[in-house]
Length: 56
Image 1 (cartoon, rainbow, N blue to C red):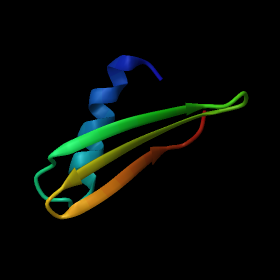
Image 2 (cartoon, one colour):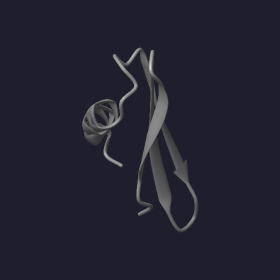
Image 3 (cartoon, rainbow, N blue to C red):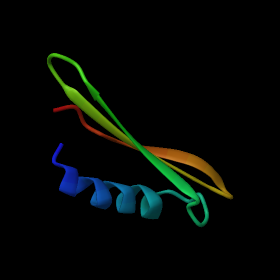
């Protein structure tokens, strides 16, 4: 995943999920021999939620 796409992924994760005002976020990238999975997790006063991009 190009690094310039990470801010957009975080924006989508914070706007698509009702966690309140986001207080923290984390992006995890897992690369296996056949695929790459990207997960953005946002945490706020309303809880935590994740957005997972389909494997490539």
